[in-house]
Image (cartoon, rainbow, N blue to C red; front, side, top):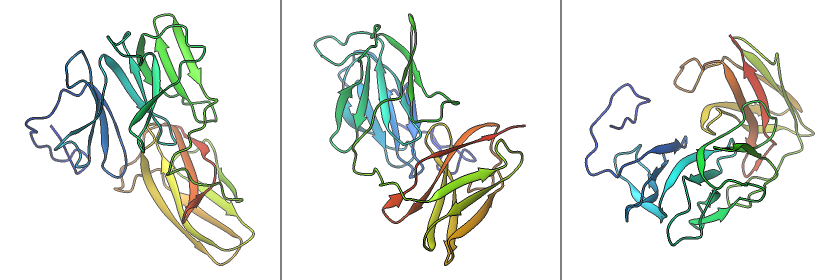
Amino acid sequence: YCSDDYGDNWTTVTGTPFIKEMVYFYSGTVYGIFPDFSYSSGIWSSNDHGNNWIPEIYTTNLNSIAQDCDNNIFVGWADFPIGQRDVGVAWFDRSTQQLVEMNEDLPCFAVNQLTTHPVIDCINIVACTEYGVYLLTDYQMDVDDDLPPLQIVLFNSPNPFNPETNIYLESQSGLNGNIEIYNMKGQIIRLLPVFSPCCSYSVTWDGKTDDQRRVTSGVYFYRYVSGSEATDMKKMVMIK
C-alpha cells in the first residue's frame, strides 16, 4: 500500500518489488531494499511515494537501509553476497549509483540492522551485528547536494524544550532563507522562512510539522539554508 497524503488515505500498489526496508526523503523519493538472492535484489527507488519503483543497483542479500541526518544513504548485508565483493556496510552514492564500502575496523560483516545514534552531536551511522554495535562518525561525503557552511551563529533556547523553542540567528549581514528542521531519519519535517535586513533574527518552532502534526519526543536537527549555502547542523531535544 502507498500514501501520498501522510497516511490519511492509502491505495493498493500492484507489480511492486518486495521491499524489506526503506528510507523516505521530504521530496517524495523513497529508497528501499529488495533482499534475498533474487535477480531483482538490490536498491530500488520510487519518486511517487511508492506507486512505481525502478532499480538503482543490483546486489544480493541486503538486510538493512538507513539514512543519516545529512541524507546520506547506507546499506548493510546479512552475509557475504555470492560472487560479489560488496560486504558489511556501504554508502550509496546517489549521484553515481555506486556503493562505497565503509568497513574499516568492522570485524563482523553480517549486519543485522543499520540506524543512527540519537544523542551523539555529529553525523553518524550505527551498524548492529551479532558481535556488537559499531559506530561510524569520521566520514565526509563529497556529493553534489552538500552545501558550504555559512558563518552564522545559530542556536535554540530552551533546549530541551516542550512544547516550543526559539531559534536564533546572528549574522554580519541580512538574512534571507529558511530554517530546515529534520527528524532522526533525515527527513525535513518543517521549513521556517527567515527574512531580516538586520543582523539578528529569531523564529519560534511550535513542535509541529509542515502539515501541523505535533512531533513526538526525541532528537531533532536544524540548519539555516540560504541559496546554495547552509550552516552546520544543530541538535535540539523535544521532551514530554
